[in-house]
Image 1 (cartoon, rainbow, N blue to C red):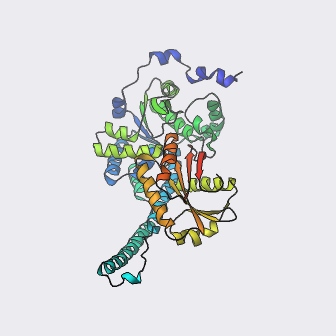
Image 2: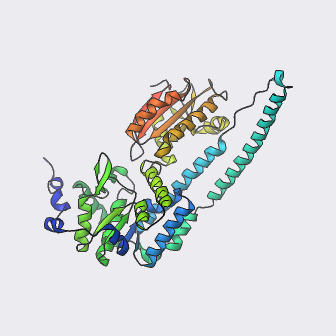
Image 3: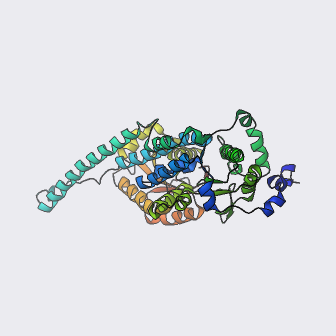
Amino acid sequence: MAGEDEQLAYLRMLPDAAGLFASRPTPRAKVFADGLVCFDTSSLLLPYGVGSHSVGAVRRLLERLNAQGRLVVPAHCLREFHVNRSKVLGDIVHSLEQQRSKSLPGHSSYALLADIPEYKAVASRHQSLMAEHKQYAEAVGKVIDKIKTWDRSDPVLDMLREVVSPSAIVDLAQNEIDNLCSEFASRVASGRGPGSEDEGKGRNSIGDFVVWKTLLNTGKQRKMDAVFVSSDQKKDWWSQVNKQPLFPRVDIVDEYRCVTGGRTIHLLTLSELLALDGSTSAVVEEIRIEERAERSGRRVHHIEDVVRHAKKWFRERGYRVASSEFDRVGQAARWGDFVVSDGQREVIVELKILSGDRTWAALRHAAEHALRASSQGLLPAFRLCLMIVVVDRKQFFNVMEALPKYLPDQMAYVVALAGDDGRFREVYTHGLGRD
């Protein structure tokens, strides 16, 4: 039989049924025009993935809301922002490192062709390409060196510091912090959002609830409607159909109504907010694409997290992660993220996270990169393994079916379906010898 928390879930989630039935929410446009606008961590991190025009639109919006005294930034969002900005910048550095390490096709010397003008032109052009590639790699290196100076300052962080005043940053009182864990546990037991989807996440699993509690307090104190700006569309925030958001959860909107004395809350993405604000369609679309990429896994699955789970997967299959070998093997190959060994042969593993609208283009690029590596004479001394990580089940099967069309028979590959926590849910392997 279900426990007390489950039996009484609806009574606790919706304590004022008559008020809920009679309530009529204020339209979102009016709430945006007059109410509080609260930004969560995901919306604060989005500017790292868009161009200067979109960043400018976000800046102007924040400046105006701040000047009107309607901007709310929960202090816990800033804590999460500072932790995650280093991961976001780390992903950029990793991508640049991969670009810098890519090598050009080798040039074979044939004595028979040495005096042929056409072959001389090929050799000359190859030398020019090598020189240009060296200059390109040096230029990329300077960009990486610049990013590495951003330990406490970067363009997005500086922009936020300039437009978010201290009065807009709201934190919980100490006595509320002391009771957070017990209150959160009770809510999770009865299935109340938000935060129940993060219960098993470990560190900071309570984060969404801390942010929600902060917004509830602010709405109660100021007796104002609110817009909550977030890319998070998990089912502890939204009622879903086929894993797609339909409406904000009724217990969330009703809790805000009850706590604030009848006020309305709307949940919007940053792109929806900018559309309400009259931003250009180009800005709105760029932000929307970045939101889709974030939800599909690019922000959730940072490269260091994926590498950690990938190494764990190989260890569980009996491989030894030969991290000390990577400088010798991987750098020589100009390919790969780490090296594993089964005791007989070393395997160079390259990881690719496929998400968003550029999945197939990224897959072709990864396959072409693998083909270049396999042509550099590494086989049979070492085996090359391309590991593709996806975040959607349909995508998992599509990639599994398509990958053999792009890779040579001797190339091993792994297709892994990652869950919201980054752990591998399903894995398909080919050519590793332990399938």
